[in-house]
View 1 (tube, rainbow, N blue to C red):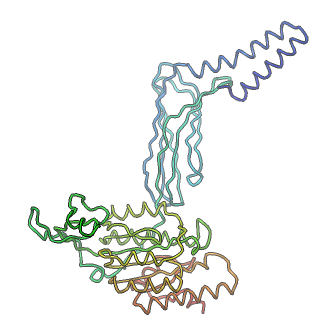
View 2 (spheres, one colour):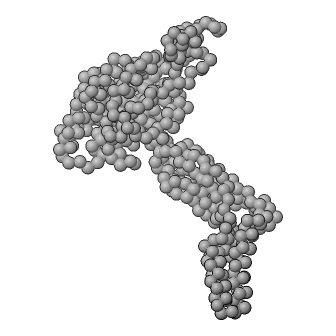
View 3 (cartoon, helix red, strand yellow):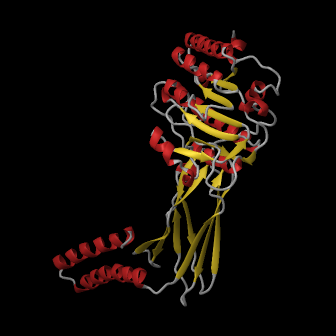
Amino acid sequence: MPTRRGRALLNGAAALYAVALILSVDELFAVAAAASILPGLAVVTVRWARYRIGFSRTIERKRLFPGGKLVVRFSVRNVGHLPSPPLLLIDQAPPALGGPSRFSLSSLAPGRRETIVVERKPNARGRYPIGPLTARLVDPFGLAEANATLAVAEDVLVYPKVEQLGRGGPPADRAGSGPSAVYRLAPAGDEFYAVREYESGDDLRKIHWRSVARTGQLMIRQDEARFYPRATVLLDTRADMHRGSPTDGSFEWAVSAAASTIWHLGREGFGLRFATDDRDPTGVRAGRQGAESLLEALAVLRASAQRSLVPASRRLARRPGADGAMLAIMPPPRPDELAAIARLRGLYRWCGAVIIDVASFESVPPRTRAEADQRLAAAEGALMRAGWRVRSAGARDRFRDVWQTMTGVGPYRQSSASRRS
């Protein structure tokens, strides 16, 4: 199609033709004809020229942590017998990855290859598309252009920010039964040890259909016992409970804290479950691969419109998942929510809570600050009386320090509300 310059030339040719009609000057007719023919020839040149150019794009790491290096390589090769024309390559990308990449390529001789490397450093979690990669071919006079899609869009996943927590964690002897091991509880064949409720990831071939017909729920034959410490992470994602900016507010702090916990406990050999105020607990995910699958869910997690934590506490009380350790990361719950959450201590062997001082993530008047301190103190007191280990955290607190204090590794530090009182 004609470029802006080509369209201007066509408009000029039309105006010149009108002037030639008025003045009856033959030379002007010739100039107008030439001006109208040139853009047409340029269009034919860029659309039907026999150029053969090969393109490839390679993304070295499609999953990375914030601040990591995202390397994108573009390889261009002239596989034809004619020198290639100058090209403009455009690779689309969102602002979080630095925006689109634009670079021009000079003419390539037959058989010559050129490689372009683009480095980006994403700082915000999420799933981002890179591409599509398009090429823009312009004739030597800049009168016509042709566009072509060379590579489709590919997704890049940026995990939440993860802090290295060092030592510490729920006691393994109270969170489970020690190191991971599998024991056969019945000989091979049709015999089995017991039946239990279906969990995500179970082998569907082991469904016990008699129990399904009797109970109306999916039941699995269990012919082996797996012993390992287990932990459940509850994250409060309610939009109306969090404060601060979308990038540095209490919600992002909470997501990073949950990701750090999952990454740490996964490397320590815990079987992990993850739940939010509006999502059922996941099936048990073990090992580094299981932790990475939960980090993928956290990478794209958004705030919810849920109003209460009570339904989530009921889901967390269901058997057989209610076992081992549990860590709750949440703003100060309301009184009815506190009572429901506190009762979970009787179902889990170890319970810890990180109460987020959401008011510290924005400027608030003194009266609002005092009310926030009262809510923090009330939440801490109610959960501690129920047997929870509780620490509060504000905008300036590192989750690593909060974690080590709560698990008894680091020195005890007063809560945010206590330090201000």
